[in-house]
Image (cartoon, rainbow, N blue to C red; front, top):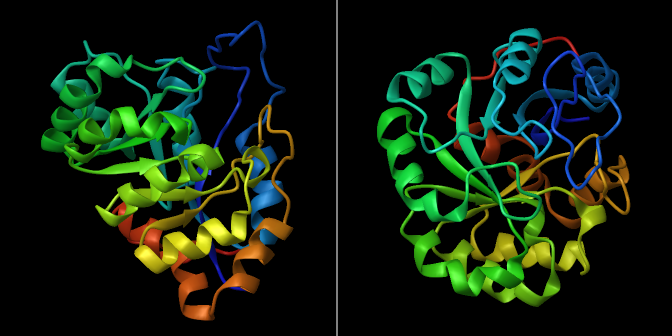
Length: 255
């Protein structure tokens, strides 16, 4: 089995501040819980992504990255008031991107997207990760294409906006091949279309622990990718596209 890079995972650690979202808090899912699942899958690195429950807390993320090691990076949520010094410090802790959660909230609002995207890119070469239903992309397209670097979570979620997602891919936007149990369309067909546009666009993620997903991540999601593509493209989706995007030099670890 080839090594994998998990470009989208969440850690829910009750030792750190959590904020209920729509009166809901997920079950705990610690770094140790994650590694029990990840190691048998040959996951050798990944991106810990802040969710709505974490809001602007950085303590859980820094702690998780310290435990996971240098093959893992963080994608955080920050207020517009964050200082340049804080961004630099977080970059030194392994943070590599900023997330805007238009689907669930908990992040800064869309009004600050452009200014913050350019600011974090200039300071630390961070990109933006956007959790958004693709049906909203047509209204955001001009703004999104002006950003220095952008990734869309979970294949954009809905069939209604897939054509707009594909247009963004044509312009260099990256897409998380994650959250297959959240979407309402043929995953393999969408993956093939994206690869035909840009074979470097897709980045696999488990989306563990799949909070509120109608169907949680399963190992068959990886098999779907390997069965759909030849070994070279499979390796890109499961490993190298994300490693390049997150600007990592992976260290060999035991799996």
